[in-house]
Amino acid sequence: MAVEHGAGDLVRVVALLGAAVVAVPLFRRLGLGSVLGYLAAGLAVGPFGLALFTEPAAILHVAELGVVMFLFIIGLEMRPSHLWQLRGQIFGLGALQVGLATAVMTGILLGFGLALPVAFLGAAGFVLTSTAIVMQLLGERGDIALPRGQRMVSILLFEDLLIVPLLALVAFMAPVVPGEDGGSRWLAIVQGVAALAGLVVVGLWGLNPLFRLLARAKAREVMTAAALLVVLGSAELMDQGGLSMAMGAFLAGVLLSESAFRHQLEADIEPFRGLLLGLFFLAVGMSLDLAVVAGNLAFIAAAVPVLMLAKGLCIYLVARVLRSSHADALDRAVLMAQGGEFAFVLYSAAVAVGLLDARTHANLTAIVVLSMVLTPLVVLVVRRLLPKPEAPSMAGVEAANGLQGSVLVIGFGRFGQVSSQALLARGVDVTIIDNDIGMITSAADFGFKVYYGDGTRLDVLHASGAGRARVIAVCVDDRGAATRIAEVVRSAFPQAAVLVRSFDREHSLELVRIGVDFQVRETFESAVIFGGAALRELGVDEDEAVMVMDEVRRLDAERFALETAAGSAAAGAGLMHTNTAAGRMRQTPLVRPKASGQVLNPEEAVSPAPAPAAGRKASSPD
Image 1 (spheres, rainbow, N blue to C red):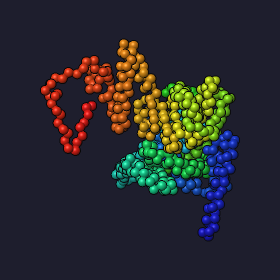
Image 2: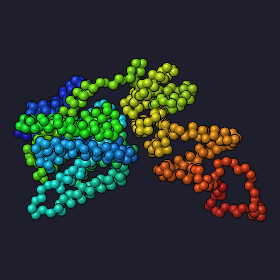
Image 3: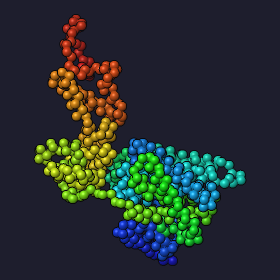
Image 4: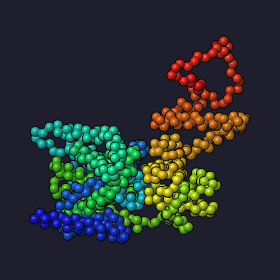
């Protein structure tokens, strides 16, 4: 019997994989996207299809690890400094969107006859957008790194963090059992805070030493096991504390985002993430209970489009009020109009404490699942109905593929054009890539061969010959893109010297921490020359102007060395010359003294200097 049971399990696994292998390529070929393919495959093998699986909830619980790993990888991309830059979007834009949508959808569910607590919980669950679906769709379009993609990621992060206070609110809304005090609730809060603090402590002081130790062992499979341990361990710690597993994995990723092992961790986790995320969508398709839909068809058929439309309108209005373009606001509204996987967590918690009955729970779950299923279709319909923006012509533009050269120049704007002249004058074999089609076409008119390619993508860098280049020059005029390219290049192509155009002083410090071989602030040298020209116009002779410019460069280099050692752009402020009295009090003059020094004490001046003490060297004056 055990053998027969094992054979049956194997048949089900084969059927599950087969359904995904057939459905996903088919749906992508039809232009419907991979998410809808997974959902359809899950529905086909689930209880209301071939009935090969009768307990999709069990599979869904395991498949949630795909979302967990997905958020870990997102966390790896979200350095604390980057999160701080997005704080306005996360807590401002996110809070405004969530607050307005929750209020509107609570009113709608009250109109459907639900009690106020039930209507609020239903709306609070539906407002938590599906991170998995939105990120998958953004990733397929290549929009995650774009400003509109970053705004959506910020809102998703806020909604993922929101599950924590919502779960706490469910616990406080729970009916009071006679004889029960509030001690257990406060204990749950203390456990959650302790789990969060424990994860931060381990992440800050334990993970990097662990990976350095494993890296010295040079055992790739152990590094992979350690990466899985970090993801699953952080998720389990948060789960034991009563918090979101996905939030734990995200925090672990953020804590490791500054680590030198970031790209290695991402590469190790990626295969598991993709497989489990696909399994998650399969399980969502299986969990669509058609019997519940049929039994409450009028309510569900009305609630799904109304809630999606209401949420989408709220998202659109918030985006327009905050000055997003019509196209970006509509795109955000369409992508984020569905409920998400955290709604299942919230509704299950509400059932456990008696706030939702089984029938209402089934109805709300079916509404969320249907909204997730419909999202790829809505995106497809809206895309086909709206006029397509005119794409720039690719005529005469060649994509980077199979290139090789001693120097790879990424970005051919003004900075890249000027810096390439010295290399080309010396006859160096230079490969140039850029993602601006207009610039590529314009450069061709002047005799330059520039290939089309996005330097932030590792596959494009390989195709551009980065693996054989001796020097990789990052000349893009986007600070964020330059940093991402520098990180990828430094990690993936150790044979090449990495030279980066820096945006400002703080960016230079960031590039030094990454480990680039050379960085230069894009305006520094031209500004120094500009200042020297101003001195000459004031009558300062040429030699003195050159000496002053050299002194400015020297002081700036000393200041930058101090800032690099301290890790702060304020560390070398004392070496700057300012236009205040305090700023003019310098021991080192910027100009040569006009008069020679005079001896004030001739007797002491002619007396012999004492010999240096044993074991000490005579020091030279500053």
